[in-house]
Length: 532
Image (cartoon, rainbow, N blue to C red; front, side, top):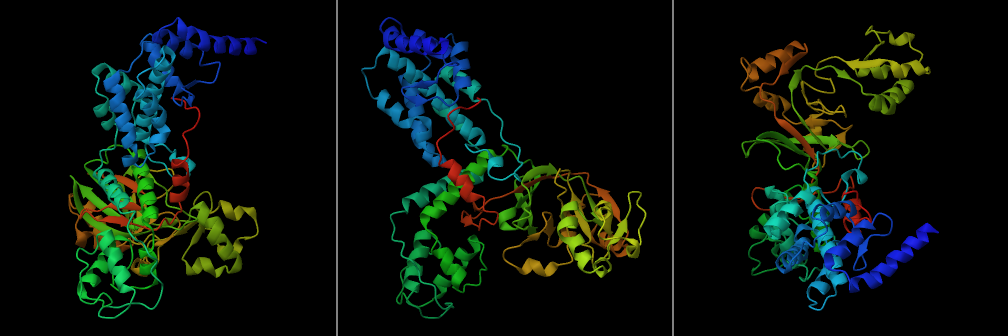
């Protein structure tokens, strides 16, 4: 009975009180009753209900917005699509409708003020740390998200009257984010261009003739890989087109041999709308990230199978890498490299033990000998393989260890940075896999090409360490740990679209299938209630 009486009383107050109350009193009534009834304004759901209530309580329920500040906010929300976000999420249509209406009641003015406040808080919270929670997309995503206080920013913005700069200050400052925004604009402007399907056929090689080349030439011109599409013979594969194809292949993660085969044609046929979606997904990923990577850091792009070392803003070196298989993903996280180990032993982790090693041993006990794996009990004592009952549960509790040497799974060196996933960088005896274009072959750790060269770089400031001294230690096959005096940050990340240092947009296959679920959530309406 009390519940229905409250709702009836509140409904009556909404109809009658605006005739006798001013805007501030209407806001107070709305906020004070918000905990017991559905909280909306101008028939739009309030998303940041807790922060909205606190904002007005702290200012004694006075209206906050004037014509200048509300106009600046409306303009900022209209431009949310430049960030890969949807203005609809931030009450854009309703705000536009009422801000252009000069004959508003006191009730409408009060609710418009609340709606403006909610729009600011929701938009800035999305700019600060993203609209989507990354762990709802993939449990292997563990980045430190950006911190910010939208409520505090709103209070300062209202006091200063500068909404535009307050919102801009919440946007990510990374250059790649800014360049992706520019690329998003360019790609959207191209969506009216003709986009005929290019048929799959025989591989086209330089100096060859093929009718498809006229469409390919036009496609590369639209995409910016070909600067001049004029030619005497559109069906002839000339040198200019060859160079354009190589650029296209390189920035799309294909083998840049200039041959136009099935993979190149399939990639050329990817629509601009798909690429726009890919850019929007990666803009959201940048909003998840902390503001700074540090002055000295190692950055891994899992989807690009590449490692970069960056110091004082300069790219020092790059290495090809091998990452986790789709069913054993390399996780996304940040840490700090503390030391490296030369001639490491390899202890088989539980996941690999149960999924790979034990099934192989049960089929063929000689597997252990072939892989040079010894079996140790809880005290570290070696157990004779012939004495083990492989059908007992005890086998899962033993330690399985591989000694240093050329056949060791970790190769000659591993690079260690604390993390809960037992993931690290390491060498590998299977160097032939680096010749592959897509390299998702590991069980989660990251294999590094020319890993001893990387070790030499990290040790180049240490006393008595150079390539010769490193090689001498490796030859001994004795394990040696070396602490790093200068410890780089380590960022394991996942990008399927970015702009490189030459200004070229790059796309990669979504090997872990993270883009679609991210885009699905990005395109949904915000949740009805938020905790902030």
